[in-house]
Image (cartoon, rainbow, N blue to C red; front, side):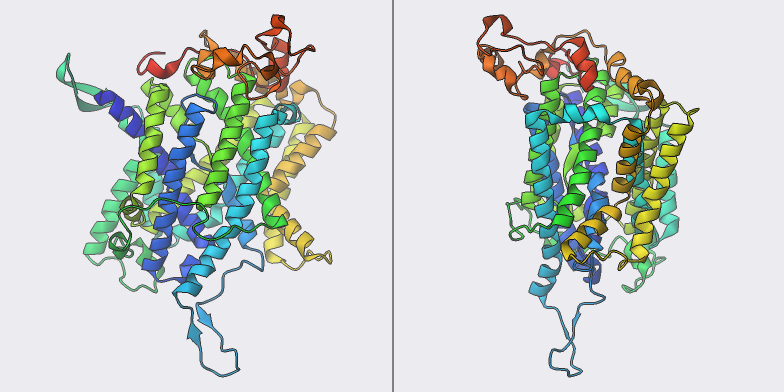
Length: 583
């Protein structure tokens, strides 16, 4: 039982560490930098609590009704880029100050009252909410109809690599804004994360354990490998505290270095209520715009592609066979549904599967669904306890910046790693990659410096184009997709064959597919042959012979050719509910 507690608590902590930075970034995009430190911290504390709450809800939905693998759902960094692009539109640009010019031409200047300040950031959040919900609805449709399998036929490494890598590369300025408050602490955070991960990651630390059989005993645990971010944040937080109490850091609130102090937002802990339950539309009715929706839709498609890869990775590392099409469809639909709820309650971001938590399975050898469900419950409860989110807002800005630097770098590296499947000796591939990467960086940068360059005569169309062309991952991903499918090249040269093969050959679990089915009700679903047409059904088969009434087709198993064509496979693993330490 002690180990069980350690395992699910560890998964929850890993998720918090990865999601932590998103509310801080979102707060800046909502113009909270104009507020006094305490008021800004109050907003971020609310967003943190809602984010944790949604991570819990999404994890429970995914592990219970979605793909049903041990997968933690967390805040998606993919959506940061379109949010930044959307908030850079003239309509949503932050004012230079909280001053309100006099309407009658006098020199008397007034300042925003609390209601006006709330409207300043909540109106922007509502815009994000509405567009996120609408884009997530498309994701639900993709899952419920099984269309994603068709789209995967045309998506290869030369589409995925620029899309994912440009997410990280385009957000370096966001990390730099946090780092500038104290570069020394930011770099120390970055160095510690690298040190724990690369240098002493394999060191197993002696820990005390207890069991009824062994009583008290010593076991070794790879703490540094599993929690490098949390350990680094803790050490640098302690350093910032020492520099704060010794007044080494400036106490001038107007100085950027003031945000490196641990007491810059201290009052928020006492101001925030102990318990706060996120409610739908508590910030008002969400708004929608064509520009915002298109930007969010691009991020949604990128997130779906990334999640499909994570499902296969989770199955592989859990020693399970590849998830069948119905499980993939349910997983996509569950993520979309969770993101709709996320938009409703005001998290400001979608939820997606976390690769870091999947990697932890390979170290702990624990893939039990129960562990991940309890971890989701912990996240949900943590989101309801307002004080918990308030304490997390006390983390100094340069520590957040150092964490973001490594996170965005890893996102870029993961995207680049997909290129291992293509033929690098092919001039075709190198040219496509060069065009998509360089234009993906160049066009958004040029547009940010020439905001009036796009003028079609339609304000709505101008906004759509500005958001799309201002989002690096969209520009690079679309160029990679178009060129990869138009320029002649074999599947082997494009890397599609090796990429698809890698999803199967490394997921060779020899266990039964029962874990992908719903408990109790699947036996009844199998008796209704028409359910074979429904993409979320355990009996779903994308190629149906004819009748839904034939008893010969009570169960439909996709052929090997079908699996390969869609890049979603058939097979399964034994139910992992009771596999805490065994596969």
